[in-house]
Amino acid sequence: MNQIRIKFLLFLIFVTNYSQGQVTDVVTGLNFPGGLAFYGNELYFSQTSDGIISKINVLSDPIIIEEIINIGDVITDIEIIGNELYFANFQSDKISKINVNSQSPTIIDVLDVYKPWSLKSFGDFLYFSSGSGVDTLPNNGKVSFIDVLDDNPVPIEIISNQAYTASLEIKDNFLYFSDPYANKIVQIDVSNTNYLATDFITNLNTPLGLMFNGNILYIAERDNNRIASVDVSSNPILIEDFITGLNGPVQTITNGTDMYIAENLAGKISKSENTMLSVQDIDFKKLNIFPNPTSDYIHLQGFKENSLILIYDLSGNELYKKIMLSDQKIDISNFKNGYYFLRINKDTTFKIIKI
Image (cartoon, rainbow, N blue to C red; front, side):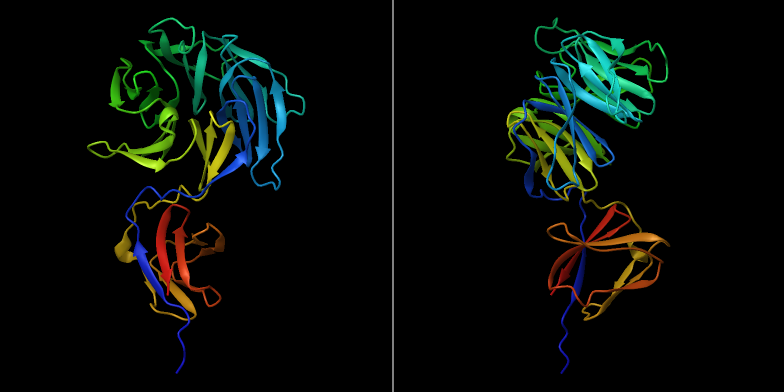
């Protein structure tokens, strides 16, 4: 009797958040890391108190830190638009920039602004929060934006007289900012020039960094030592744990399926691998993956032509990657028994169990 070596049982995961992956240290020994920005596979990061901007190549082994600039001043955030890195020089009341492709970058002052805090790009527009923080005037928090293509940009104010405007994020026609003093996230409809601010999420614990992935808003809660997640399309809004057990997280950023976290109080940048795996809307009635069980192949039918098919194990190792036609088969005869994720075009995820 022939032994069937491998069986596939396919389950659809009806979630938009993937469970917490293993959190590992990427860079340690930093002095209050804050801003994060990717340029390709190079992760730029600021050390807030020292006024240092450095970079690492996240694919390198070992990781080597390369210092880019040291202004000896407070840098609260960084943002990359094109090949220019903008940074908020909090102590000197200005936003400046450098060219990331320059071997010896020259600092160019872009705009004088009182206590710039957070930066967020949207096309050619650079949004920034200002006027909040230590030794600032009460209720002086603002959110404004400039067109970075202008030689002499003039800031356009969106909202002012806020208690605290910290991290910014933008999705569709809405701009969000965190208020770590009032423990809330505020939403502004930027398609309406009245720019009315509405409390969107409350009952947080020192929310700082904000980041969208699809409809999911990730919130770095510094004093709650976690990354929380909220589906902004849901009603009612529910706050859920996404990554816990951190030490003063203040900012997050993704690269592929990995989430990088600036743990301010721990003085390090950490990484949660394969955190951003998700399931998107798809016409599942047209999909067919068979047979089950199988000892050699799985057949795929009903996929869009030229779909990218990937298979990962539970450790996040990529075992298979190929552009496929709508009706194809995959040789899995060399796979070990276990659990796997099959992904379509990097945005639709299935769970595969091999018995």
